[in-house]
Image 1: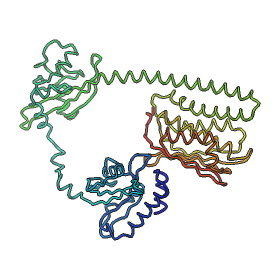
Image 2: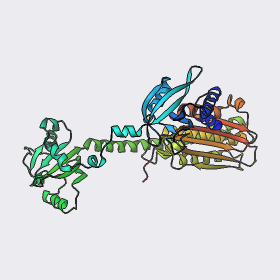
Image 3: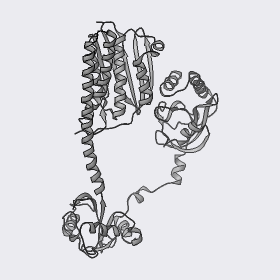
Image 4: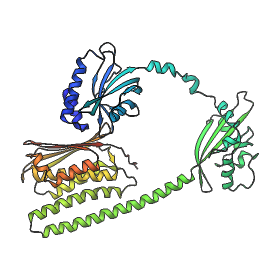
Length: 485
């Protein structure tokens, strides 16, 4: 228990060691206390990476069955499910008997109290009672009765709506009788058909004169009666440069003597025009990324020429480091120049960064880089550039400082997604260094810490000893899935 609480607090919060000790003491007290024996008791902290609450301790009830079948320590308490928890964490005020939903979708009421250390809220204590039976008794719904509503009753009621109501709708509504004659319409229907060139009132017209998909009324009725077309159909049609979502609904009244055919038109022309504009702009943006990549490579070429002409070893080293940083940025722009989406496959970028570092660091030919990166991770361009620079600096540091020339070694790069967070580790088996002393004067580590904190909004931890160095950091994962073509 102690280890779990400490590890989670160090990884996900800004709590001090003294704060963490206070939470561990509280958790131990709850586990042996005679209080709260008939309820589930939790301690949650504020997860700075996700802006949600994180469960770090659970004491199940001693006199009754727990509400939970599975382990919940380490799970997230979402604001939409447990508003009282976040409210108390943020305000320091008690939250009494607020309705909530557990991670297992059980309805409960929560009493939430702040846990303070030196007048500062560091966590919350949560007492939970199951009230699912109470809620269901209040809001019991006959699913069979409400899930199925006779289409004819619903649409018949719609057809009886006054013009003052239907005329407020943006969608065109046209209601035809069993012979295909238009019996009722709204103002939007008049406006739509005026745009299509109709010069007279469409009231009383036959469906065949109003159809937008060139299918006649008798054919539709035949398809419906033979079961070849459902009583409700939705499709997209294009006519006169206008785009519509068309819904066709067939209704048979309860006495089966009267039939109605309803046509609903939703204009999506503006959406289609904007989509075309987006495609055009995307092509232009791809061209910009391509030019940026070419310009960056031109800068790299100039730096390499300058490096070869320089007689100073230190200058050559600095120029090589600059080349690696520029190539890390160029790798992102190269991928963006080849796709329409902003989402970038992280594995492809990091693979390019590692390859460029390996080419530049010729002094360590026996050092191998192993990568374990989730290929399903896609990030936006800004965070991808930031992450590429961070990885570039960490790999560069390992190559430059972890091993002696011609010494064998290994660098392991791991990036994975877990619980809506990206967790990254760069580990080498080199000689290590004094983290405190080196951090104060290292440009590379300054870049790493700055980018993780400011660009990625994450948290970094560096551990180093004579057996090697491990750098770990986490940041919130807002998934961007690129479209596969």
